[in-house]
Length: 396
Image (cartoon, rainbow, N blue to C red; front, side, top):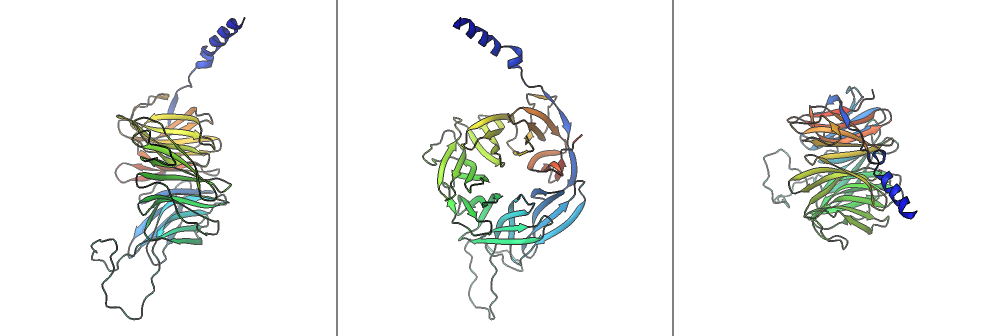
């Protein structure tokens, strides 16, 4: 009887209904909202799409533009303190406030008399013939803006060298950002009112931190890549994707790394649900990976898609949106055979089943995805040449 039951169970597992593959999806067209030539990033708040860029004149400033869903300009703001400042990461909090992170120079006090000494040049760079010499941007800087771009607060953390911020995460427990400082990957966190902790360095220049997600309890999740031993975990491939958990007190409590032998891997983007994307290169095969992790960094589903390696991800309203630069046919996507790298936006269920695919031949690679209940899913993407556009997944 036991053998009979096992045979019946095996037959049921092999039946067409149990092993049927998900249906292939047809590619539908994305809507291009507007050209955004100088945009370096995109966030969304309520009914407004907000681009930011760094502009240069006498000193570098930050320009923000608010657009409606049709691409009509609603407002323009400039962050200009009189010294150099740049923004390299942005996000929006639960109240719709806009947060920018980057670097700025300290305001110098003008002396009443000019001292007759040679100008310092700590970087050893030959000065260009400019009307004003740029100061070192040694302050990690966070700007808090209202949903219409009005300044609310600025938080500064002076350092001994410039920092390049790569990602920012904000919630009710505080602020965290990651990047490169003194040629090493670092995490720095602050209270909601801008009281900074000391930077926490993770590895050496053989590692990189590309994404950060704060948890409600104040702990922080970091994602990136490494070709060195971290937290006692040795290198598995030629470069591994890494997941690092840091406690509220600022101590590393967990390091998980990919285990693809002889492969190059990196996690590039993470959303608040711990759904990640990054590239996987094994031999000549290059793919974008989309993986959902639980709070213990255990994968619950994963999908690999051939690509150029560029991708981003966002989960909203129960759907995961994965955007990548596609350069070949994809299993499960009908009649998809791009001749040049083309942006493809895919949708997944909570179990990782692909349910939709969207594209426009004018778009080549994703930069970022944003979502609000008023706008739905929108994004920023590269096109041909230097063109950059805002797109939208319209509901039809």
